[in-house]
View 1 (cartoon, rainbow, N blue to C red):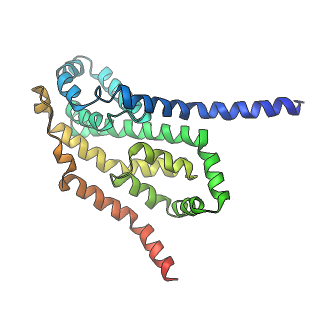
View 2: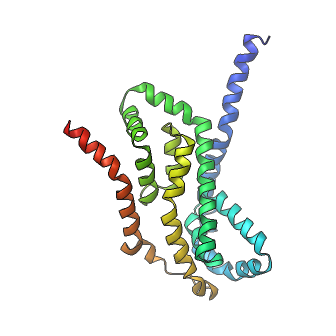
Length: 246
């Protein structure tokens, strides 16, 4: 029968072991802001596009695997290159296949962050928020009551950074199944739009030119995403309106 002293020592150790992944992710995310700021930009893509195409043609399966792994790591460590990766997926693999690869990588990376954050600090933060009874507790309760609408809105409206949208649900006590499904549904429109833009830029990139991506900030691109976000938020807004009338 283990003594109480050894049990008390084991518990803090297990807590810190659970926190290692999210602490590592946060440290590498901060480092990435300084060391990868220019390395994963559109200039680098234009410069190396010919090499990427040649490698894809010579080693297609390896290129697919490498692309998914690199994109997933970019998402997990919040490196400044997720948009470039989405464009690259469309330019290298086309709309349908490239969109599928972008979807798998983004969903895998997002889920990894959520699981690491929830195991590391999420459960403790959620419990403290619930026990506090203050503004945080009310926000947590509101998100939990409207979890599908709230999470879909965060995904669809391009206001909340992707990395932050993976952390917030972990700190609000959202279940993995709900997070996974809302993320899967919510990233589909963005994946399709950015992959489509990338597939249309292959000729420009083949000439070694940096593409004009002002279209990404145009109403034609942002309008549908905002519209879908408002549609996802509608049930939550209706519940708030009805509650205010009572």
